[in-house]
Image 1 (cartoon, rainbow, N blue to C red):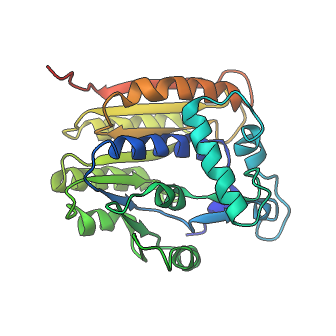
Image 2 (cartoon, rainbow, N blue to C red):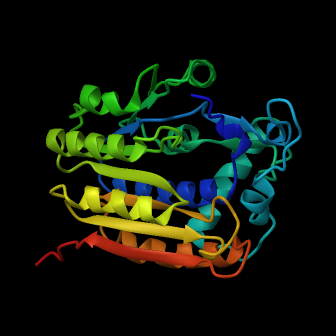
Length: 292
């Protein structure tokens, strides 16, 4: 495993993922009962954005200016986006930054930790030795977070069902392995077998459409609960950009999650566009049943 997310931290894909993650957390917290947050590929937890310009040995073009960098000075943020930007700015300031969100960036674990209630619990999995060491250091004193050096896919079997009987599982792998999609489908099947009502969020890159369509087909071959697919593209299909967009598949989304997030994605698509032809899409893979 060679992946280092700090080269990409704060880019448009992080913006999309983290805006939606915070909405999922808010949805889970509509109920007083606590829940387990299981992050299968947690990374190092926090990122110094200056490192994005260094790379391992050569200078790199940082990605955060086209992501969080486009939002921090805007005064027209929708409430769901403003909530995210406020949290990022606060985190940056607490770490000694200027509070403009461009110095220190919180990964998914820290965003959830900052919003977790006393009754909520975090299990953060990271297999990469260096990333795990940084993650463990970040959460050494955290009262509700457990950091484990483990294969996140296997962790689904180890930690579900939780004592709380409620869980939000984030599957956000580096997509380095050839069988990554197959492993995701297998993990989802296991998670549903152990906790059918688990909220499962799967992040994926928009690169090869054919491969992605095959993954969605394999996912839909499972006996899925209500399942929503959300996508954000910053460029059209003909663009030369390697990463044209990203998506999130959410199983058992909170009630009215689609109505809440659709306008946020439309706004982000316009705000984060890099080339013509992008946009946002929200569709049900398995329809949500309307309460009678």
